[in-house]
Length: 259
Image (cartoon, rainbow, N blue to C red):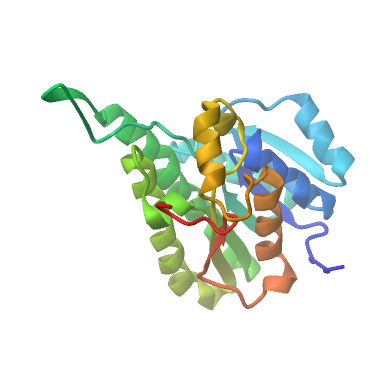
């Protein structure tokens, strides 16, 4: 059994109320971590209870990661309660899918709206920037930490109808590489996870033929589960990955784009 070294560590998980974020919070809790869960909704007493049953301590905070003031206040509250932050998991993300230009019957039928672009960039890119900027000074003072960012295979390969989402996830890859160069000297490791098709609520609402196509692109023949990504985050944050820095770990079942 791997010794993770996460017992008693303080972990912040953004977008932690459901899906991959919830699975990640519970997985860290199972290692004895103290977990601050940030989200804009879904922060019920049941979630805190689940963290405690798993073996950790919980702190639920309603935070809009696109608002610097809210992020700063949330960081201050975590530090006041637990003394610092050891791991930041920048998991929060949204989708607002649309083709750049949808052409039909000889004319423009629809376009990707500016509102949809701004919303996705705000959460998926600006939110990662704001949260990391607020947490890193505390990690530097403490002599180290781990920052983990949610990218996507879409950020590596692109995807039809996801100009905004793909752009943000590619941006996360490059922020990860940049921060690895900047922060390694302070003992702060930075890495990203690039999930493939994961069975979250968003995907479960899609037509079955679309889901079947996703599975057909995945050599392992199934969609991933939120717990698969949580395990990747846990390993990257653990002592077992102490020399893993600046990397993007694809957790995608061997996804083959375009097949």
